[in-house]
Length: 128
Image (tube, rainbow, N blue to C red; front, side, top):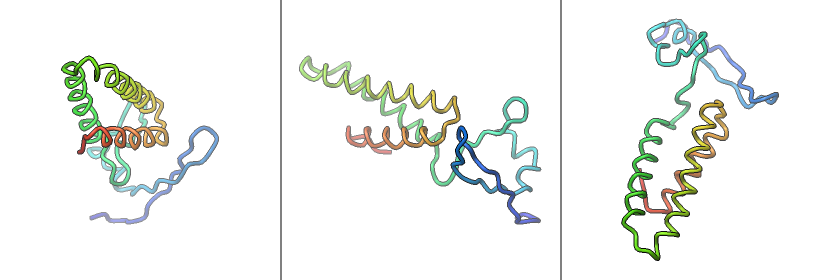
């Protein structure tokens, strides 16, 4: 598939601390059509997926689950409403935190929040 299978290593740092190394095939970087989804302003590149985690699918799952939970909340009895409202507010705060971590490109906290979010939704009965 690639002419040269040598991978250039990039160190990933968060603040002043190194958090890992990313290996990238140079043929991929040189192919301008491949880079189009990653290019932001001033030639910065954004990583949208590492490993097996699909952030787009997770976002769709979270949004669908929150919408369903909100609909259940609106139809809840008075005795259930306060408990469900507290849960929904906590989930919504997590969604705002997740958005802030994305904007700051804080991958470590973003992944922790996705994991916690998935667990919370699983406990509530939602599955992917």
